[in-house]
Length: 356
Image (cartoon, rainbow, N blue to C red; front, side, top):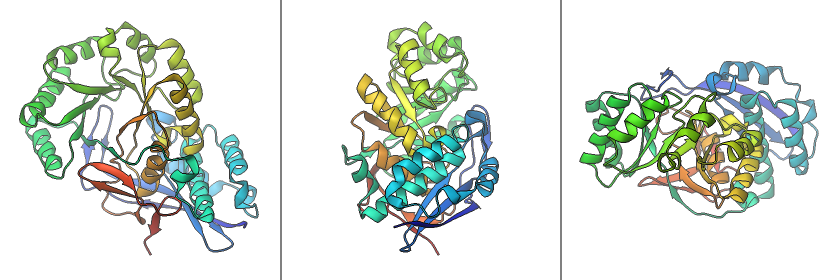
């Protein structure tokens, strides 16, 4: 069965809940989509929303790149050659992870639909379900608590609070949630916004509550140095996010930041599933815990991440809430969430259905 056609388009899916993090405010969600059609009518779909700040490619640039791609390297090729086509895609777009991700995910979806199996079965499912956190942006205490209570009422028991602008105010917000909802598991994400002094101040002020993890507190340029300066009890909570984009980064972190033993894999950083899978193998061999995160994304790429996450024994944390506040999407399905627990649908490929 051969690839018949490739289509590229962009959509603004909108967000019902604009939010602020340490370095930006988000009020729109534009997604780049790729569809790969086979001769028998199967259509694989991929999606991308990469961050210019993190990987050097914005979604607008992704769309421009995709529209300029000569897809003759795919069209006419057998879908059974997917692994080779994935490597060709990687070689062509190594420095363009957003472009790479959309094509990569679409290829995997088309291939596993052709095989008539869920994508997770192709990778080898190791886990059935895990809780995801849901994220609260940087807000005042009253707004933070109101949003936390809303999510609690929806069944979520893992909350991630964005921090990074003021460690004193950040601590007050997190403590207030812990006081009002003592059974909630709290994660924080400073998005590179802290200095070592800031983080130590935040940790000191939150010492009486239990934090599950602290995501990327330091800038990428100083991350390893500053992690190595931390007390081991703090370093063990630190997650490498923006500092982890590819296997080379993973190996460097293992070698030079021994105290950091949690990796956050995002398909929009790695350029899709192929490279993400390589990082997951490194983590499993090194006994590093994995967290799977996201940007604001379509159900398409969130589902892709969940399929791969549940195929790794090293996966301990999910933060795959990126599609929950979208006003609309181009697909339905992909995954199930019940009381904050994520699982797959058992459908072939990604398990998504296009909305006509």
